[in-house]
Length: 490
Image (cartoon, rainbow, N blue to C red; front, side, top):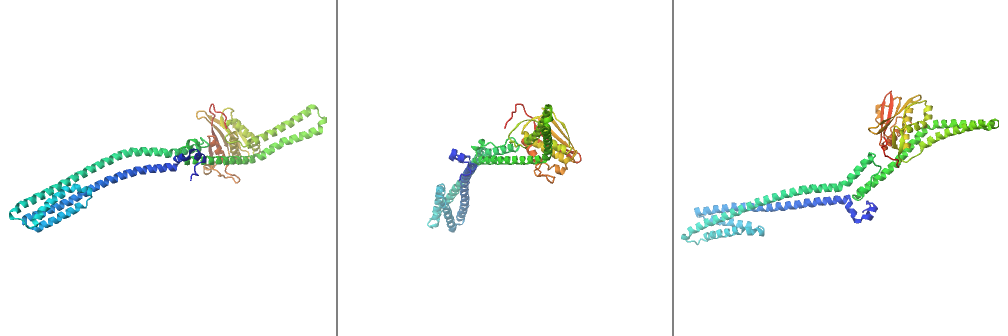
């Protein structure tokens, strides 16, 4: 069940790790919101039920009032016309009223005692009239009593009805005030709770997002795990997975850079082989002459020939040294101070034979010590090799190549510009030229400029390409200058 939690967290934190799970945080958040909502709902239901019951009582009193008015109407008819049937009907109406009251909840019956008592008194007088045992002399005072009791009954009912209405209005006002109070309390508490829950839940996610942006912008190469490990188990696992992915990408990227470097070496192999062959031939011929004629030579002549052999051997050694230096796979994390002028000169020395074979004329404007950057010299040289070879191939034999170095001290930037006078790059090709695997060459991989662009981006720089059809292309490499106090590091 806890397999998604890193083992070292399970071992050290135990059950407390549940509190650092995003899933548990969400459950707690929903539970708190549910409890607040449930409390508000229960309070609202209670208030509505109380008001609803009061309204039922008021409605009942309205019905009773209408029935009593009808009873008084029957009483009036009897007093005017002496018809006993009217009193009998009035008695039946009183019985219906008592029945309605008896259906009420027992706890509310006490409020209707006065009404029941008054109805009993009124009904007794009606029973006397209906008994038909009344003397003529007593009829008149009984009629007066009947009218008075009827009036008292009506008064009691009206008073009770008005009291219920007042109570209902008071309760409605009270619950309204309570609702507003609850609202004014719930809104700030809810907002504070939302802010707290949002911060509690989203802070680790926002940390991962921000660190991912830093990785994308080249500010860091891996996301630090420590700040997030004790806050969110899922985010901790996500960060570790991202870092593992970044390591894999880094490894694959280094393989890609090395394969592209080998492709560049392949392009200059023929020229290098020719250049090495010349000193080897000179060494061989000189050694043969020395071997055949050594006895007839003076000591100075032999010394001169041996010196020639050593010079030619040193020349071959330098060529091989440049090639080995370029082909060597340095870790991308190794950074040192690099003089860009020396870097360009070294690169041109490496490509000297390719330039000689293609009869390419190179014009440079370089000043040593003008621009020093902090980077991996092996990778930066690979970028220059790719760009120069592309320019030479674009121009064909007998082309003119210009390379110059500029600095912008205010922006603390260095610029290496390589300009060829080839056919230029069409606009539809130019906008895709830095994309991986995009090429217009039959034997091209489409990775040269893409890999170069990735290397420069790793060095916090950029590549700018300007081209006009028929007028050539200028590629400018932008790199940050070394700041004071910056030391070599790996």
